[in-house]
Structure formats: structure tokens, C-alpha cells
Length: 513
Image 1 (cartoon, rainbow, N blue to C red):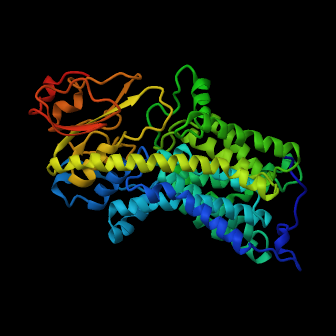
Image 2: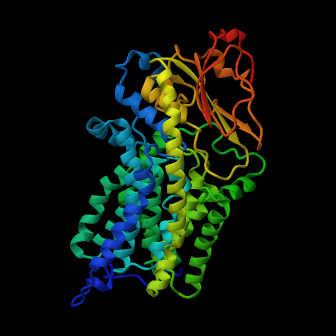
């Protein structure tokens, strides 16, 4: 990826925009792109309950945020302090949409639309740079359902989609004198809005713009010109520095930092089937190397992909209140390197390039459909829970299990539907906008998680949050070996149960788990 010669004042036009040359997408190509983008949203379309690990916790936060303290049961347990920060994408948009269609329908719409926008952004970048769709965009589709999306990092994914579309606009405007004049003032608010959605998405846009501008410099010494070219995106630096709040242990990976980083790299495309995920990761590393060897790796995106992967080695796990910031960048780097492959082979190979996306999407869709039906049955338990109840949620999580966990925050639906107090919220003071009141309790995520080895069953007799609760809601592969004394099971499914607890024990008498 050697920097090329400096370009004239305006950027060289792609083939389809040169005088006398007209290139347009055929009706078949347009239909194929549209179908692929729609397919990216298939899991959310077929599953009533999105199977993103953190999604129910986000849904509960939006419920409390929109309520604004009007419901006495919620106001007794929860406080919400709005703070402008670089992590508000869906939080801002959910309120007007929920007013139209209801909260759960609005949340599901975002789950459906965001992967479609990411997929569309890949095609927009490919077409703007090369005026044709090649193998790179099709391979990059395999990263749409990355761990960040599967875990429910919707603000980040919305910002990533916006960054891809914004980058395509950056390139497009630079291809004409009039567009070049408008590009800088236009991207000051665009950059700020993407930062508002999620600061990591804003960072990805900055890396993409820098890599693009660096590829157009005469030599390596022109890096500072490429850096200065990104100045329209600099406005959010000030609020980022002023509002930056790191979670405890953000930079602490223990004594084996390299091992943790290696584990994140190994899990960079983790979904359900370990060896399919491994194979996809290896493919997306090898394919760009082969393209580079054959002179078919576009430096305009290649530099951004390489920088993203390098940043994943130095960025801390927690950044700006968000978790797994470094893990997210690995999938982004693989996406950009795949997109940098500048090759349009025959149709047979083009269809083959879609195989990783198609296989991963089919697995995710099937798992979501089955588990959504299971969750629908589990939610019937809430008919037994009165409004404003205290519900201790316990979730068995298997140590070493490859598949993304699905039950981690299902208990938060008790807040969404019954205004209940649960112990599985993201509600750390100074980090999250949602916090607990003094009338509530101290239990927040990850107090609901019980980590066990394979085939182990949890003993809940001394589960601490249950000492202050009225109900116990358990989720897990195996039924618990024992429940707290006096517990009476009200509802049971194969992988869950709801129990009415004996009167809570005062805090001073609570045992330990």
C-alpha cells in the first residue's frame, strides 16, 4: 500500500464520471444490492425478540428514560440523568419512534434497519470509489453481523453505518470543484452528529478519511497533510476530552495483556459456530494479503483497515463508558481490508465471495428464530409479577462456551413490562445515565451472572440479590440444584423459572454467594 502521486486540486474522477463515459448500475445489480441489504436485517425481521445479549437492558433504559419519572414504581427505583456524550445514537432517535409505534416495536425496527444500513454503506463506498461492485464489498458483508452487533452495541453500529455513508460522501464531494468547496463546512456538523451517535464510529470515520488522504500523498512525509485534511472532523475532540470518563480497570488487562488481546482477535467474528467463525476471520486476513501481492489492494481503504487493526492493540477495553472498544475495531479493520480488495472477477467467484455472509447470516437467523420463540414462552412468567416488584435475576453462564450468550439481560423485560426493580441493569454512577435510587438496592450488572463449568448446576440458596427480592427469575441451560429457603415456583419452562420468595432478609443478615 504505497502512497501514490499527489492529485490535482480535485480528486481524479472514477471511470463512470469521466467525460464521455457513463457507467450505471443495471436493474439486476440494483435489485441484487437491495436484496442483500434487506437480507442483512433478516434476523430481526423473523425474531420477535432480538437475541442480542445487551438488547433487553437497553430497552429497559429507554423505557425509564422515556417515562421521565412519571410512573411511581419506576421513580421509586430508578433515576435517569441525561448527559450529552458520544454514545447517544439510538437513545436520541428512540423517543419519537416509540411515540409512533411503541417502545418494543421501535427497538426492533432499529435492530432490523441498522445492519441494512451498514451493508448499504459498504456498497456505497465501493461504488463511489470504483464505479462498480467487486469481490471486496461482498466479502466485507461477512462482518456486518460482528460481535458488536450480536451483543447489541446499537449506538456504535448506527455510528459505523453513518461513517461508511459519510465517507462515501467525502469521496464524492472531492470529485468536483464545487463539491470540494462545500465538503469542509458540511463535514463539521456531520462529524459532530456521528460522534453524538458514538465516538468510536466518529473515530472510524476519521481513520477512513486519513487513510484516504494519505494514499494520495507523494511520500510518507505527507502524513501530516493527510492529518490536516481531517480538520472538519475535529470539533468533537473538545467534548470528548472534557466528558471522558473511564470505567475502573479500563487499562488493566492483568499480567497477560497479550493473551487477552489474542483472545479478542480470536473472537473477532465470534457468533455461534467456532470453526466457521475462525475460517471467516482467516479468510478476511488472507484475502487482502493475496490482493496486495497481486497489486489489487486499494490503498485508499487499505490504510484505514491496517490502522484500525493496529489501534485494536493499543485501545483499552473500556472507552468513554463503552465496553470492548478494542474488540470492535478488529471487525472494523477486517471489514475495511476486505472492502479494499479492488477486483471484479467472473460471476462464479462473485457468488462464492458471498458464501461467508450467507452462511453466517443463515446460522444467526435460525438461532434467533428458535430462541425468540423460547423467549416468548419465558415472558409469560411476567403475568405472575405485580407492578413495581423486586425481582432478583439469576443467569447461568457457561465458562468457555463459544456461542454468544443470549440470556444475560432477559430479566430486564421485567422493568419494561412490569416496572420492576431488577439487578441486571447497566447502572453504574458516573458511567451510565441510568442509576438506582437509595430506595432500590446496590445490585447491577453483572450481579445476575453465575459463571459455571460445563454440566455444573447452580445452587441459588445463598444468591445475594434474592435476599432483598420478592421474586427470583432464573435463566439457564440447566435447572438450579436448589432455590432459596421458602421459594415457591410459579412458572417454569425448559430453560427458566420464576419463583415467589419468602419475605426479604434485612441487609445486615444477608449471606454471601
